[in-house]
Image (cartoon, rainbow, N blue to C red; front, side, top):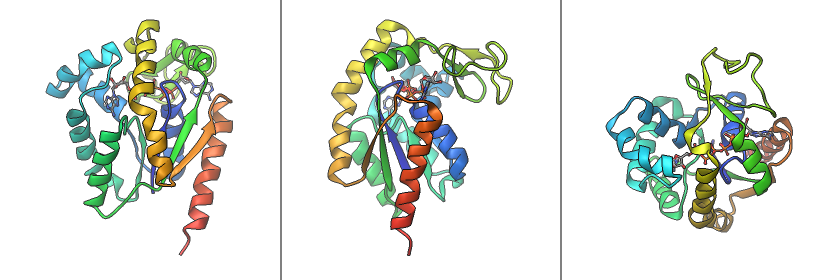
Length: 221
Ligand code: AP5
């Protein structure tokens, strides 16, 4: 099963994708995490992506698409995967369709996590991320049990450099211009499901799981 989580920065795509992936036993493919790993190990891709990410702009499509295609080629994606952060514009959506078509598979469900701007700003300004396993926490909403230490793996937590107020504003502008047309794109394909994602994380997860169950029931052979 291939599920895409769409939504503005801070809507909770990463938080939900991680839990959903564990629940469905599918890999979580997050282009933001993959890019940050490349930046932290100073790879050629990381060097090219760093400036775009720090400015809150999209990394060029060709770089991200190649990175994602290589990730999809790994054997753990055979039963499907949860996509978070890709596609980010129509060009990427079409590139994804081509990658999947070559494998005779297609996107099953697209879940759009809708969130208000005030909630987004509040979430991003308090976000803490694990430097080892990329798990997300929040200084107020979802604090770790031990200050600045990851509950899952004991890694150190840090604040993302693109969560500064100015960069968040830029990311929201880029989202509206580049990514919001994807809502119509997947609506036209009858794959889009909208959810209000301002509520508590467990409540949002239950709504997504319900959509997955409905989809599976309606596609039973
Ligand atoms: P990326 O890492 O994908 O960032 P994003 O899309 O801006 O999304 P975020 O990670 O900020 O938010 P999220 O929706 O995942 O929220 P989260 O779950 O963390 O991309 C970063 C950069 O990489 C981009 O700007 C771009 O430069 C580049 N990039 C990535 N993909 C690309 C692509 N395809 N093409 C080109 N460039 C690309 O939650 C946020 C906070 O809220 C957390 O602290 C969390 O604990 C908390 N929270 C979450 N849900 C809840 C809840 N229900 N209640 C309370 N708190 C909650």
